[in-house]
Image 1 (cartoon, rainbow, N blue to C red):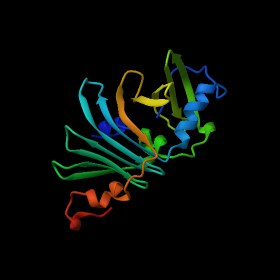
Image 2: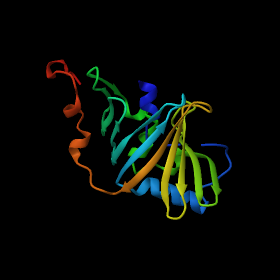
Image 3: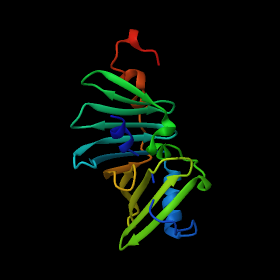
Image 4: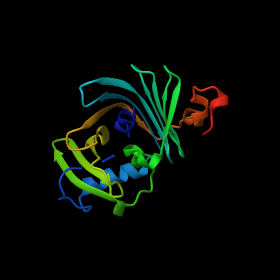
Length: 199
């Protein structure tokens, strides 16, 4: 379950050779730092070939909601906690938000000095960047693909290591559309009887 959680969403790498002086690199980083909300439908391809689809909502700072169409799983953060909810068996598991690779997407004011860019590639109408947070001690990183014209984020791939990856293709992406606060209410989504809630 945790492997699925960290594989979903939504930041980060190839070889050490690019610098922050690249114009398209700055364009990408400025986008990652600028938006307030991000909503999209997605198709997720897991490392074992499994294909899932669903919808992601992000409201900064720190809030996200990821719903799947094929499985009864909800991933949700209220800005302080990150929870994985299985509605079939009515269970909930909490994780430290800082331990989720996608957490970099959830905050606007990350410092460039904290980000390691290990690859930037351009081909025709495509920009591909690989980045990670320097504070992470594992092998995980995120690859993000942008379309140049019109400038649009099309895909991200979360690498748990060089060979284990989860691809997320984004459709109908919308930025800066207002999301309802209730969409990120973990207590409202908690499937357990109230008497058993102690978080």
